[in-house]
Length: 103
Image (cartoon, rainbow, N blue to C red; front, side):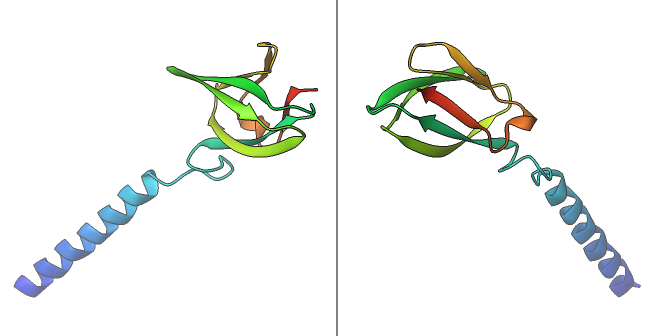
């Protein structure tokens, strides 16, 4: 009887662990854990700064001259170009989009 109870406990523990792990796995089609990859494009012949505003934070980055760099962001993030104009707001349909920060 003890072996049966022990087997049931181990089985329940394993099933619970697998269920818990799958609830934290990223959803299909959402990139890396809900992050969405876009390509930051600088078509200018000089390095430029662009601004990224995520919910709760804002950061400036440098886009090097004539470059295209993949970056990942959370949905709702806003990307501003070198002239401080909003050029893109990240959504689930943004995956793979080229976001030009200087032309």
